[in-house]
Length: 293
Image (tube, rainbow, N blue to C red; front, side, top):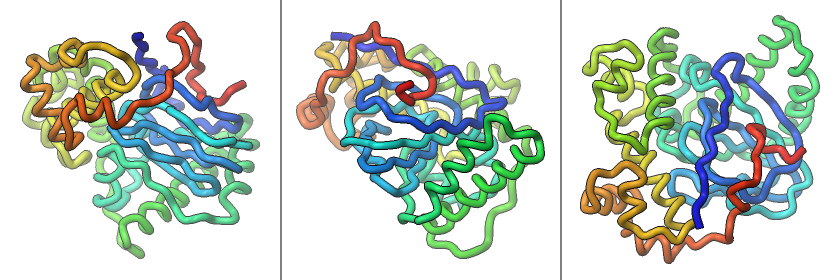
């Protein structure tokens, strides 16, 4: 059995969207350029994210960087669900604490403490954003920034000082490099290819990427490939050797080495430990908004 990778085609501009609905309880790997904020009512939703099975619990804001391939693999009875998509370049510009950003960009699901007002605020954003004029849209953006900042400060154990934002142009370059890697990770990529794509010198491209994401381009590319391999291991019966080459590794030995470094176990061990229920048939259509309409 084989599954397609779904690429949600959401442009960076406007790229700021809010939905409310009921989620699919299974959905193939997909990714997009935004930071995704989730909130579940009455149940939970389970993702496979960066090789780990993580949960959006009921009644708590959760967020992760959706540029890391992720899939929905299960959930309990969710009465209502909210999605907030925030362009990555905005989040990078907000000057959030470095420890928080490193956790976010490494593929961690960050979960905040319960708050009685979160659902009320999400309802207001969902109601107002579709018809918002420029001034109201900026107001909602600032409210989202403030809420994310509170999460970041709580997660980082800080109470005040924020880091100064970086220049907007370099942030856009970094975001585009991550996008290019996500779209082409299964092919034969070189640093020069990525740098050329964004019009930068390779050394400068590497410096920018590491400064913002806390890892090299090569490390990030390996993470993407291992994420895809993990998905294929638990959702298909493909031979491990085939998976190694299909996900962009040049040799089986390199695949095993990288996989164990990222996952802490061999591909076979991972497959046996993380068997999941079958995902929907490959010909099922999935909207870019994961709400079931």
